[in-house]
Image 1 (cartoon, rainbow, N blue to C red):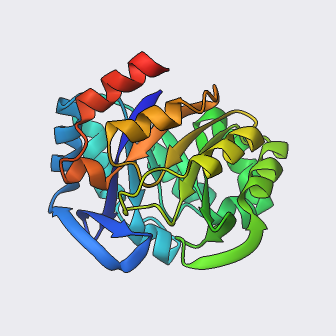
Image 2: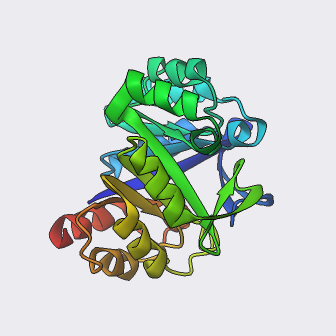
Length: 243
């Protein structure tokens, strides 16, 4: 299981939001590359980068920052935020993204999803973001009445094999992972997925590994790392032992 330190970008800065709320924002690094280099030096084997400006506007806004990160570091970087066109996906891959993370457009534009899967296959990840067990969209600003597990099943039927499952209520709250949601996601996923939301300490990683779901292959952690509650190297070493 891989630990993915999260680097969320607004206005060119590395930030964290509480429960996806743009009004509840904490700035951490004026240059996201500083955060990326710090986490890789600490032992990160991959990075999770989200263009929050892009997620809100519907078009990538921080591709130049992504390019600087991928050029400077020799680890896979998965990138999402505002990817709603074939061109936007291609531009991020050209900028060095190892994988691209789709959100809203994967559900609302079947032709787009099919085209991107046909062109990029295993490099495509779809993020399923749940609030109260239901799918949220448009950078978490819109709520649907579609169960997140049903969304996962529908996407799997269309050929999606890589997912991120995010618990919005837990995101940025350091309140522990949504184990029930993670287990439900594991049972719905055809392929593999990465969990995100609420991880604050090593015991949280132990709890996720304790679900014993072989398709849970990664954990995204943000605020706990920035605030020194979880050390990257120790977290990755623990996951290596447990999984």
